[in-house]
Length: 185
Length: 121
Image 1: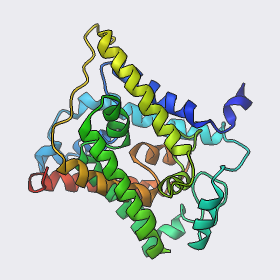
Image 2: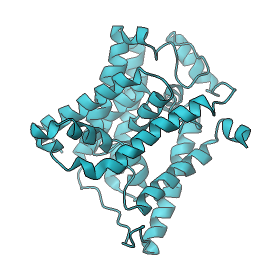
Image 3: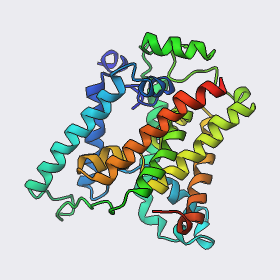
Image 4: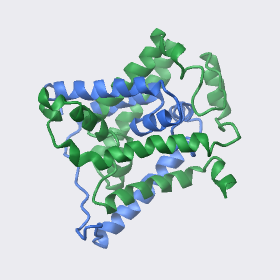
């Protein structure tokens, strides 16, 4: 059984699992939207005293913070006890494209070459992680949701605004991948 | 998310290069099954755990905030290779540099809150 869980999961299982998460939250009277937690954490830190956007009863969002804690624990469990012994099956074309930028495919979940403190201490590293994070946090609140709130919850409810947001996600992602990465590496 | 590699920086690169069906399969399955179950709950007047009708609130009608905000989000998504959920999953996996991404995303969220009234929505 544990061997069965340990192997990489096919895409349709993951897709259905994401929908199951959304349905469980809906059943408990909540909704699936992860990035709201960032606003909640700002409010917890006292940002509501200065900026009205953060002046709300963050304690009502404690359930979503629990979801966040669950995500961290899930990551810990999967990497410590359920890690697959096979390398990630990345497509040949992507491996070659990354090679051209001198990013070596190591078969892990993220390139260890980039995800370490040494690389972070470089200008490129700070740009990718700190500026990248900033853009994620700013963009998701501006758009009123992230991949969970718009791509999953919004599209499931046939919301046209969510479709615009998802198109925006992809335009931004394509710009970074095809225009910004070649400049960085 | 971990087990299907949806949190993988590599998979996000692959997705934005259209070099594999994997991520599109995950998102497609989630959206199609999500549409079906959301429709079913509406038709069957599904109730939540408190016995109240399940509501699916409409998003406010506009396009500016969704397009501009979405685009900015997408820029960061491809840079870090992670959207908000996976940022925390990767932290749990032991990638401590994600703490810097989290700090960045909190600064970004805070900055949005400060300039909210000056931005086109």
